Length: 269
Image (tube, rainbow, N blue to C red; front, side, top):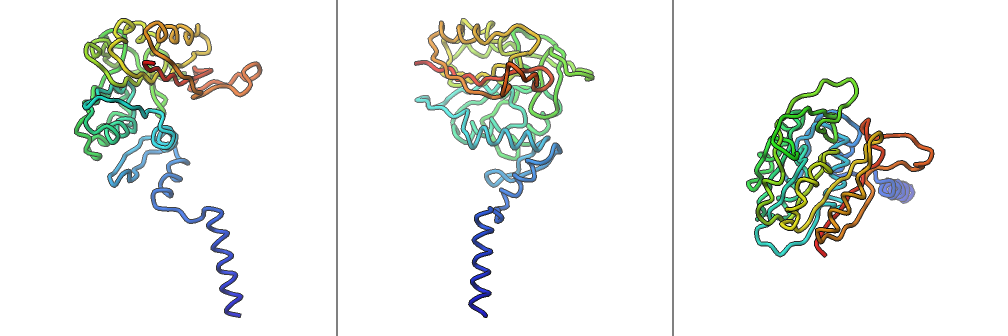
């Protein structure tokens, strides 16, 4: 009888393991975040990390820390990294942990996420991050800013039924007068405007990550963006961020504006 009970207990244990019933505390917190659009806090690398939107946190964490989309190699002893669109701070956390001697500039205009970004820089003790609370653009000005309150916000292009805020911008080219090891641009549709303005300073940059956003009712600029990289000595690689599964048939869009988003990795060959 005892043997039979033990055998059944072992069987149930093996089934539970196979079905992944047993989770670490971190895995439990991640599953909780995955299912909510609410704010929360999670322990990352032994310190508190605050998020404003659970699903946005989960998706971004998977991209950055699991897939490693921002990972790069450099011979520089003190890399300079420009993080345009820092959001809640997962990207700057990745850069700071992997390149502790780097000088990191984090640009973020969205007031809905800035408080979380500031708290995370402090709680994670990121001493090498300079926070610039402005948008990235082709000039210093004041622009309308719209946000989806989750993955990000964008300059000039509106969301339906939303009253915009007004945010200050920096001119990115002003930060490119010295060698830049890594430039990340996830600026929700402003990338073509900015890239055109900085083309003559791309010679100062080793690596660029740019998320291209195709706006469904406007002219596409992917070919022009790739041409800019090519004529300035970059080799590029493309990977899908968001697209329609059946583009001849499907009419779905992302964030009310995008029919496609492509990650562009540009590097000197």
